[in-house]
Each structure stands twice: as C-alpha cells, then as structure tokens.
Length: 107
Image 1: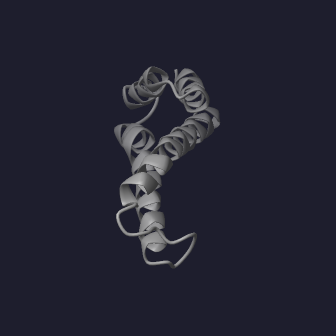
Image 2: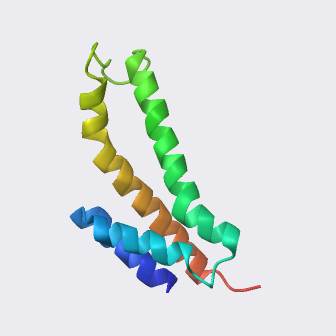
C-alpha cells in the first residue's frame, strides 16, 4: 500500500495530475502500516515543511537576500510560478519517505 501511494505521488509530480497526488496522499494518510504520527508526517508534515521552505525562499527574494529580487507588485506572479514546483517537491518528499518506511524492517 505504501509503495502504491509513493507511485501515485511520483506519477502526480511528473504528470501534474491532482487526482494522482490526492490519491497518493490519501493512501498514505489512511495506511494501516504506518502509525498515526507517521501517516500524518507523510501526508501533511513533509508537504508543510516544503511549503514553509517556499515561504522562506519568497521572503529572502523579497528582501533581495538571495535570487533575483521580487519587484513591487510582482509577488503574485512569483507565487504563481513557484507553487507547481512546491507541490511537486512535496509529493516527491512524501514518496521518498513512504519508500523508506516501506523498506524499513518492522520492529
């Protein structure tokens, strides 16, 4: 079940299919193999960490700390260009965690 969820997440990241992404995260969250904490981490924690990283990146760019500074009134354009990559990154992060967890021996 975990590997199926990982495959759906990777397929969704590659194709941009929201249905595959949602299916992968739902399977991960509802998995009986994972503890409740692990399931929440796979479906919400890792994507949240990736989203937080994106917010920090935008903050740094808006202050001109790294990357090309975002011009006045162009934040929505920057977010619009970045969010598909953030969702893909979150899906891949969750898939990697699920594959690692599926291969880890049970204790």
